[in-house]
Image (cartoon, rainbow, N blue to C red; front, side):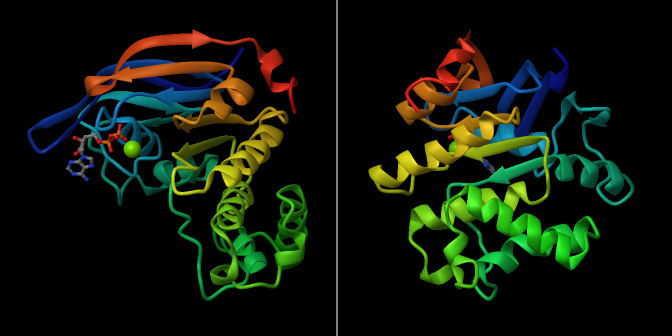
Length: 239
Ligand SMILES: Nc1ncnc2c1ncn2[C@@H]1O[C@H](COP(=O)(O)OP(=O)(O)O)[C@@H](O)[C@H]1O
Ligand SMILES: [Mg+2]
């Protein structure tokens, strides 16, 4: 098994408060890990450190052959940080879609601007992703007209348009109605089957039961209270 992300002795403080203390965890390619734990133990902060949306004070994070270190100079080391962000897609609780763009344009923007993809190619891949989240018929709609579950499926497709190796989900269904939670779980399960490495912060039982290959429970300051591997069989059953 090869490592997707290697976190060693990560310590993160906000001013005087230590939010993550000496966290070490290895994440293998293709794992689908659900992170759980009470509010405030640093789950979101942990995900944000992985893409250097938050700098940290100690330890190191390796993403493929790239390395994030404490207190990096964001301007001088822009290339490393950008490369990490290109490899890791991030989907948040709220969708952060661009309201002035159509659904398809939302998916085409970053690949063209960041990856210099040709418009035609970005469009084809965008449509392909829309099919996979069952929203091809919404390609020309503005995002304001979509339901919460549809917005979240677009947010997932948009992150995937950048062809990331790893996807992070921070409570992706907590602002959705129960039936929409199911459809998001379904969409993520389908991408999980393709071997994408996926980290999800959620308390939704459907994710643990159907998608997770590993469940990690955080206690205060990002302490790992339990780390349980599950049979990958779960991915293929009940779907
Ligand atoms: N930008 C910030 N500035 C200062 N403190 C923060 C910031 N973000 C989070 N915190 C604090 O860090 C702790 C962990 O937060 P968070 O990572 O959001 O936890 P979780 O996602 O597990 O609920 C909390 O005490 C929170 O108040
Ligand atoms: Mg959180």
